[in-house]
Length: 544
Image 1 (cartoon, rainbow, N blue to C red):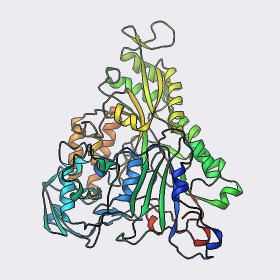
Image 2 (image 1 turned 120 degrees about the vertical axis):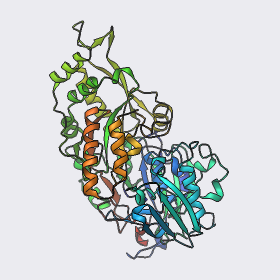
Image 3 (image 1 turned 90 degrees about the horizontal axis):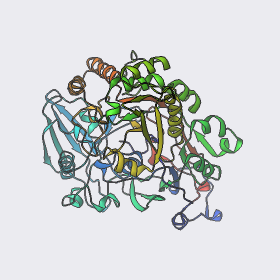
Image 4 (image 1 turned 60 degrees about the horizontal axis):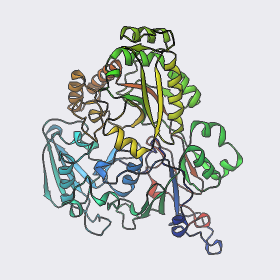
């Protein structure tokens, strides 16, 4: 869980202007006091745009992209991925793998401090584990830790973890952010005020939070990997892609993710070439339209198959993304060895879609163009998060395609926090367009296993397939990639056949960063793996 490794899909809240608090915090530097130098220098601020606010900053409850972005700056795990996608130590300095993978002994870094000045120790690791497997804590991440047989603190800086059986994602799972036992041991994590004022060990300390407007972080001068050069990190909540672009044009935002239109056609001017650097790399995830499988309308496989044939995914990729995306059949990253390239997307076939609907009993009885059954038209509402223009346009194209087979699809735009808390977690929806940001290890037990359907967990669609359950469990027990691959290829095949989601596309990540920031490098894992080393020369710093 590297801070700032990749910007996942944004969401939006409401229209705002630049909050006055930024002017109070980031005083414009006086040009007369600036030294002319291109050497690494401490200072300045980075203003990053997001179209959604964070929901909750308790690390093991943070499941949306905005909350994860902030938690990734404030907290650390025991492990993390480096720029070449290799697992390296974070809070763990090293580890020993014993008994054919059944035991991991973590040797923790010493002299790491929580932001309140108290030392990080093995007690914090044990506390985090206990909360991850506590049935009263609404975490979606428990699946990775249910395979642990025992965990013990050998001493203040050594943790021994013993698994019930071999567990392939064990090391990567300990990228889970660690929480402070001394602050949270008597707290109800589902309701704690810590969720608004977190204390971690990370490179940035929490500063302030103005709901729907701004989250401010300040650099941790005592960070164990070294003080970040950038002093302040401002996470601005800006309503939509167009407004963010206007902020880029006035340099009111330093970093954002471009839309494909902006990337290909609107940022080639001399101004953008002078003031910004653009990057492009493959996404670590995919976008889909997910069904509430407890809804009778979607329980017939033929209905879900009909939708898959009816929706022209190539049109979505070419019209909205200008080719900066690929049609996907999920449920893995297309670059992953687990992705089964033998599972091909269903062809766009309206006749086939109508035939499947008719087999399921949905027919145009009144010759008015609408498919009916038992006197009711096939009608449903898809939810889209506010401010995500690409998902909204995608929904409109899907709406158009489904109309051609007699389905009446309505589109409802919902603010992000409400979408998750009031609709997804409570299963008060028919269909939703969302995306998954995936780990490098293909283990997707928490998303697809039939046991992971509680409120706050990731299998909110209610998918259940006994063979998939068995394979998900088996895939976690095998370390050899060559032996694991056929298992995940079969999972891919079965899930696509079941169509619990309409798998849509995997879009490229298109970040843009103000050119005053130096040491920004692209890598297989994104541009932010070395964020604490980004700096602005004194002569170009804008804020104090």
